Image 1 (cartoon, protein in one colour):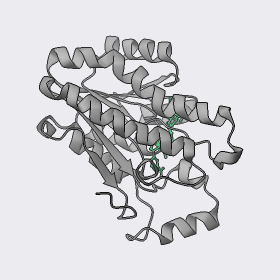
Image 2: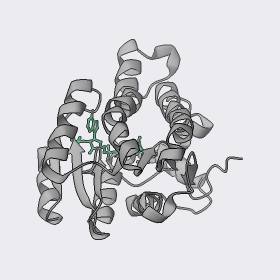
Image 3: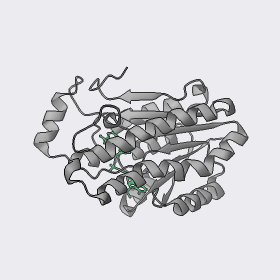
Length: 242
Ligand code: NDP
């Protein structure tokens, strides 16, 4: 029986590459998104069998209902990829509470809202894979992204603690910390600033969404059961953490 995977923000950017990769490896995939119906339609058309559902991962009830719909359609969730994320950049001395809250609810609260409804079933069935897409900037910090760096660092702490709880029940919990990846999120960075960022990446280029998807597939495998609580950096050597 094919395992069932849910990818949040799975219809665009890194998430779309994860959806495509898991689909190509034979998983049944549900891709969530928040507003871009056109991208969702294109995703469903490109990957027959992938179901795309719109809900806001920062809304607790919407997550519970969305996951119930997926489970009714495909079956119990074996693999959850918490990928959806946003930025609301600005220096902290100018940051509004709204910018802070938006990032916390989508990038961090969503971990609770998405993971809590599926974790009991995973524990009961003795199998689960949770992969959280953090960021290099949650590891090293980034000026102009105090909100985002805090949320992504929080994601790493969540991963470590939940890994300990799930370990004896066959539920692994890991993070991937991407460096700068060529998606719409990075396309929003001004060209001059982007050139300066690329100059700090020893590999000499932005990463590709497919390179993150490769790492997700590795951690999602049935044979990855001894890898848990880890943060896997995929960043072209831009930041090498201990
Ligand atoms: P994109 O902005 O390209 O895509 C974001 C995806 O998340 C979209 O599918 C979007 O849906 C979805 N999304 C956003 N908000 C919500 C929400 N409230 N509820 C449900 N879905 C939502 O982002 P990337 O692909 O670049 O980034 C993916 C993840 O990787 C993020 O967590 C990001 O922080 C992280 N990351 C990215 C890096 C990069 O360089 N790109 C570097 C490090 C980490 P819709 O299409 O409907 O808008």
